[in-house]
Image (tube, rainbow, N blue to C red; front, top):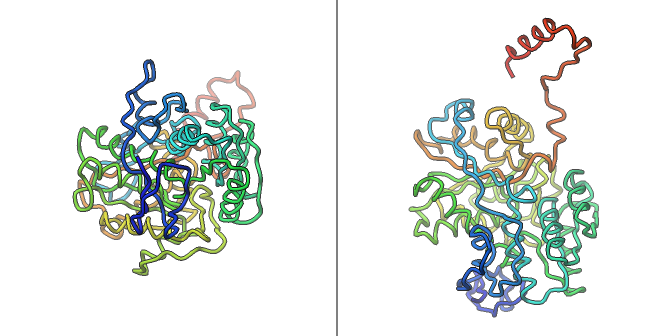
Length: 409
């Protein structure tokens, strides 16, 4: 196994390196470890840790990530005007810490331990920090998590619960990114920030594609909608299908979904630009994708290329659309998702309006984060909550229930 720069092709040995020594480009893991599964380790844990670069079974850190359900959503299909196809939800909220980040962190922290890291550091908008804190606790490693000061309380609480050192930095996410890089270098800790900075962590996302195809009975979906900050999950899906021989025109079209209040990749896509430029201060309820890419714009440029290579598109959604999508997911599919996790559903009306979802299309939406991460938007939504001053009056309570159930939500 080795690391190869995606830009200049320079190769590096399998170490904790975060950029190409020749050009500063993004590094990618090449090859497989070839290690046989250790006795007693569940197959799912093996596929999501040992196959992804770890050669020492004793270094594997897993909480049972991956193998998440793919759920057909017929009531949601019916609730989206103009949709005439199959809508499938890849429920990444079922991962141990409640988001898809666990896939990346299991692989990244396992390789860090194998390479002798004394601790880990991570810049996060919340989900990656919660994942790193949980997996570091599992591994018995020290963890430093840096988040923007405005990170939702649910995510902050989860990080703190696992005992990580939590640093709250004013301003946008990119400031946390810079501090994490500096602290990792100073302390010699592994940097598990889940942009493209850690190739071992990014490599942990490539199994999403094969999972989707297997769960669809061998079919390749027409579109896969991916909540997108810097874009490692877009790469994970693309690489996963490419590994099975479905790349470019043969693979699914990838849709990078961003929030209108932080959409550097969408802006570049719509302008026909070759490079992504950094955003200003994000302004969106979707904290998980509020990454302005300041100082690491090449991450966005790489994701932009991946989207175009797949014949896909990039779309930005409003906060109002996100709230509506959260409501639809909860009430039509039974999934409780944070705003970022609901963003693919919010994007579907725009894609339909542009004629990008043909009749009969098989569409997969990645629901990337659980609603417990950020429940503020739900608290502001209308709800069927009624006081019952006299519970002994069963007839009155029954009439109240009948009336409430008859109301349209």
